[in-house]
Image (cartoon, rainbow, N blue to C red; front, top):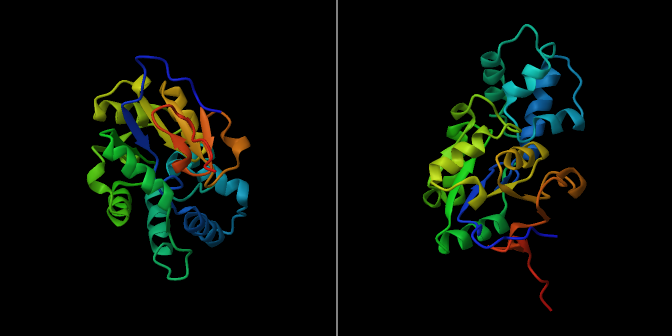
Length: 226
C-alpha cells in the first residue's frame, strides 16, 4: 500500500540511508560488533545487533552507560577499526536494484542526498565504490549532527542541503530508527526489507523488498509485470 500524493505535494527530493539501503554491510558490521563484545567478555546476540543498526554507536552506548563503563568511545572506535581490518569479515555487497533506482531518480532530475549514521570517510568511500558519488548533492554523516536517528535532525539537515521542504522530500531507509527519523522530520518514508522484516518497518508509508518496486513519484508499488 502506498501513500496518496496530493496535488502540489509531489516529491522533488530524495534522501537515502546508506548501510542496508544502498549497500548491504550489516553482516560485516554485526560481526565486527560481535568481536568487540567478545574482546570485552560481553554477551552479544541478534537483539543487541539490531540496536546498533541504523544508529550512531555513541547514541546507543549513551543509553546503556554500564555496557563499557571504563572505556571511552574513542578507544572503542580504535578497537573497531582494528577489528575491521580482519580479512575474514563478511564482504560488503552492493544492492544493485537500489543503485538502478537511484540512477532512475537522477535521470529525472530529482535532488538526491545521503543521511547516514556512519562516518564521512566510509560514506564517501561507499558512494565512490558504487559509482554514484556525483549524483549526491549533499551528505549528512554521523559527525554532522548532535542527535542521531531516530531523531529527525539529520533528515531535516539533509532537506535543507537539497533546498526542498520536508513535505516534498522522500526518505529511503531500512531500519526502524531510520523510518522514525524520516517520519518525525515530516517526510514520507519508503522502507526496504534488506535488514528487517516488514512488521518492524510498519511506520513507513511504503514497504518494498527492492527499491525498483517503487513507482516514483506516486510512491506506490509498481504493478507486477505479466
